[in-house]
Image (cartoon, rainbow over all chains, first blue to last red; front, top):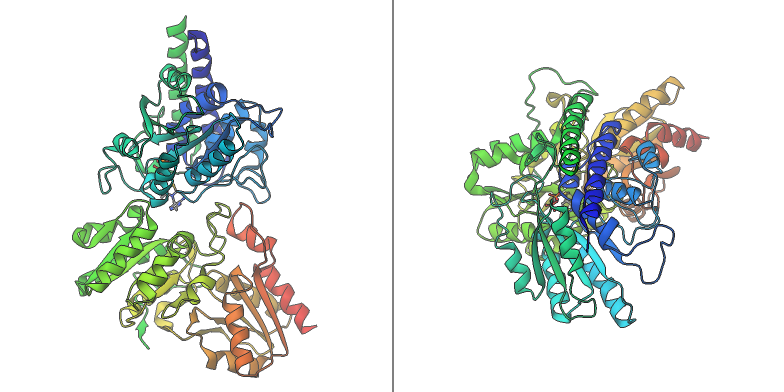
Length: 287
Length: 326
Ligand SMILES: Cc1ncc(C[n+]2csc(CCOP(=O)(O)OP(=O)(O)O)c2C)c(N)n1
């Protein structure tokens, strides 16, 4: 179980991840998917720094937990969470991101970047791939879990539900999905055109063990990860994480414009001040 | 064949290199077409911000299905079966690859007049290989009943959408980023017709045939070549299927040397169509070069950097022409 101190440490990591997101977006001359990166910050930190059994020193360990970023446009968020865990150097990411020949770009590329389990970027692909990894692990009697993080907008793709049906039917207990339910797609809010609700019930209907959580509450996320059903059980788990797109920066929150955008110095300063203020408040609460 | 004179929103004379937004033109022309013809619909998969004007003007003829490209095409087929003229607007990789079977079996098989307006053709997204559309022309031109155009001039996106209204078959209209694209022509000076190419620059030493964004690179290359005394002709082969064979054969006859440049795999796109046509006509150019994406999944980076890396930007074109003229 995560004690208070551990949770506090993870929250600090989340602050640092948001800062690095801003730093990278400022230095890169092009759009960065800040909205969805900020909404999954706590989730990625909790997975890479608490919930998943991964080791930067042994990236091919046979029974490491696997992670696939199904919402591949969140690659920057994943690189940064992994860098904080020791997989990569943030300075390398900062120096080369998005350039020809760099391993770090808008969508994760496994053939260029070690420690990734799969390339992604076209939506609706990661969950089916994760189902494949889960089948392989089960047949080989391996004990690790397969985690995948999907977008709610991404869940409009039929392939998500085809994979959901397969995992539910075959009872892949070693599969854990997390959905970043930020109620926004790229160009619309959920409910504006498409309506995903009742979202959690959809997963239940597909025979998934479905848990809802506040995706910005670190203690709550840790609690869910602590209480996952055994990997050799017969139901996949879906963690429906309620989040806010752009979380932590007022002008990015719930804004269509910040799905992906260029960050200039002026907006960077405002955003960083807000993150700093929230961090100071966190410090105060602990002290 | 349908012709349309280009209808530019700008009053001023458009010069080579002026910037315009193909996606903005698309949205505006959709509104015009929707006003003129109440059977015009627009269907997209989470691309609403690029279709704001049409959506506002005709909310009851606008469908955004969320991120579900296959379904967007299936729905367009359904609409067309009821007599509608649907435009499916979206990113080239996902229209051409994700919904390929729907495009083929729902639309092309039934020869329905569904129009696909696809941006981010070639290596223009900067997003890496999941987002590059370097096979789309090969996939689309292979489909029976489908015609394929690839547009470099942003205003021509609109002209071809207009032309498509008299074209009762599936049509794939491809362009690049669709934002800040260089203009190629003053709209008053050219006419656009599915099945025709445009002689964009006269020349007698060699012909550079290009489509899409690479027409601009080819024109710049021809300027640079002129400074070295080489007179290169540039042809905008925006109509890849049907192909303007007459113009092609004329270029071979008059210039002998042929360079094909495209932001696409070098096999399967325009170069392959041209090679097929020349073989069928038993015409052998003095030399033949294809410039484009080799058999590789390219990395990240801007379109220009990618084009240069694989030798098909203006510099690469210049080098190829000089080399072939020996
Ligand atoms: C198949 C496919 N279609 C379209 C896109 C373009 N796209 C990138 S992100 C995005 C929206 C994703 O929304 P969501 O899954 O909710 O992610 P989040 O809001 O967390 O960023 C879209 C449409 C894509 N990457 N893949």
